[in-house]
Length: 55
Image (cartoon, rainbow, N blue to C red; front, side, top):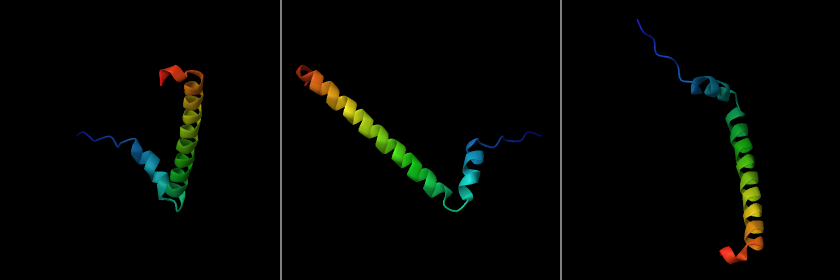
């Protein structure tokens, strides 16, 4: 008799059942993405400032 393996996401989502955990995770991910976007934007602005001929 074969049994299907449970997806790996099940382990991850099990902990999200605690009150506030999913919201905290969304907030953390949101902050990381926001920070990453700001860093990329800053680097891009600097690159275009240094290399205006590429515009």
